[in-house]
Image (cartoon, rainbow, N blue to C red; front, side, top):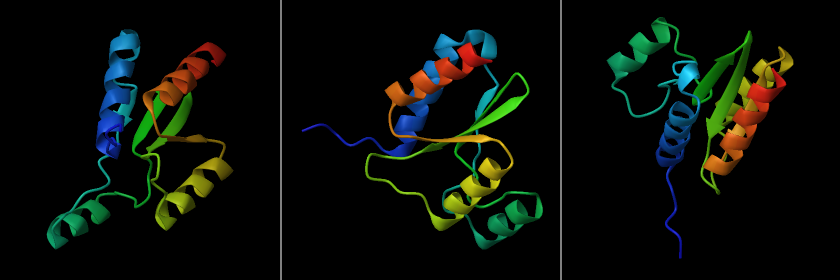
Length: 116
């Protein structure tokens, strides 16, 4: 039986693959530290400084476009705030992807790079 990977493990695997495969694009894919447990004060500071609930885990900025990646386990689902954010960015023309494994991520990224 295979060990279930956490969202963090999937994200780390995707990030490392990107940086090792597309060395010239390092820094254009980055994480949005939007989750995790925070104290009430930290939460208030984050909110006051522009942290938005539901924003995708990683953003990839490439040739004038921004692509949104939400990392999930095979059984993980989006929160309501994540669904709302997906609808909002999609309405404004941004592409949003739910990623559950490295294979899917690498195919999408390589497709983006070839297309643009």
